[in-house]
Amino acid sequence: MSHYDLIVIGAGAAGMMCAATAGQRGRRVLVIEHAATVGEKIRISGGGRCNFTNLHCGPANFLSENPRFCRSALAGYGVRDFLALVEAHGIAWHEKTLGQLFCDDSAVQIIDLLRAECARGAVEFALSTSVQGVARGATGFRVDTSSGPREATRLVIATGGKSIPKIGATGFAYDLAQQFGLPLVTPRPGLVPLVFPPELKAALEGLAGVAIEAVVSAGGARFREALLFTHRGLSGPSILQASSYWTPGNAVVIDLAPDHDVLAHLESARRDHPRQQVATALAEILPRRLAQRLAEQADCASGNLAEVAGKTLRALAERVQRWAVMPDGTEGFRKAEVTVGGVDTRALESRTLEAREVPGLHFIGEAVDVTGHLGGHNFQWAWSSGVAAGRAV
Image (cartoon, rainbow, N blue to C red):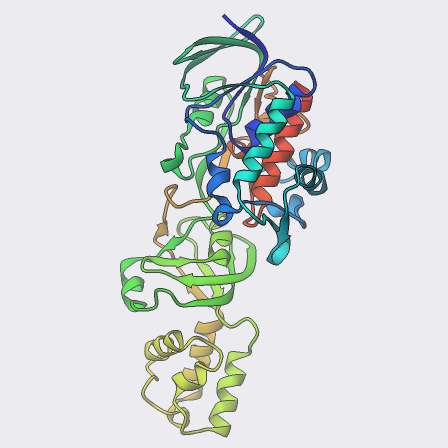
């Protein structure tokens, strides 16, 4: 039976970063991956160009029940560190809005970078290999696989969360954590579209495809980005961001016109153009289809401004700027970009991501209860947590 200093289960962003770091420190490393290829989530990210980090990434960009946990890893290996690695590999990149960094060419370049860094550390890979069991012994860990057993002094779990099961995501990390007595923060979909209840879906039928910049608030967090109406509910960056903070039974509050005082606009239009229809005035600051539907729901679509009572205009303005939506749920892990929750960080050492009660066992990346905002933050957590573990083994 082959014995390694380290076995990493999962050949995604965090797993390969950890393996490369440890391998370049002289450790004998094996990466086990159940898929036939590595880095599948990297390959599909950022529209195929991989939003590999964010210039503004910091602890405030992460959601966790233990919000200080991510500080150590992010401080130990930050945005500039990974950007320097990208540039050392000759990968051209560009900045989009809000500090998001993308490859100019292809996400495959990031996968190639990680493979090259693993090669520098003589990391071995066992692809198309499923893990059938893990046991802890006197000298480390035994991993039983479809290609035979392997042993290692240390074991890193980098299998991610449950998001996007079509590319092979499973709850393996959670099952293993519970096997070794580690607590979980209940996993749930994050960065995911929200679904309307049937009555609201019917009321907003025909708005699919309407996009607008909005401010969306949920669970104490507030995001200003694009919002998109869909056939099932709401999506777009602002909704995806808020979804990580939303919990069932609570409303999402939306300002559809954050740059305007909607009531003042309608009152001014009534003074200056009293014969103008309400929907027409509203369409000066909102997409026409949306303005028409909101006016219809306020029972003032057919009348002109002079005929509409002041309290009706106030109610309409309130609907536009404080629209309280009660979602019926989310699109689930099938459409979620990340998993919120995971291995409870209070059971892990923040500098090494090692389980406090199980020496030699580490959990990194999305498997852990650290979830980043949209825009490259989750990849930065993968790099930072991977390096932290790789330096510790």
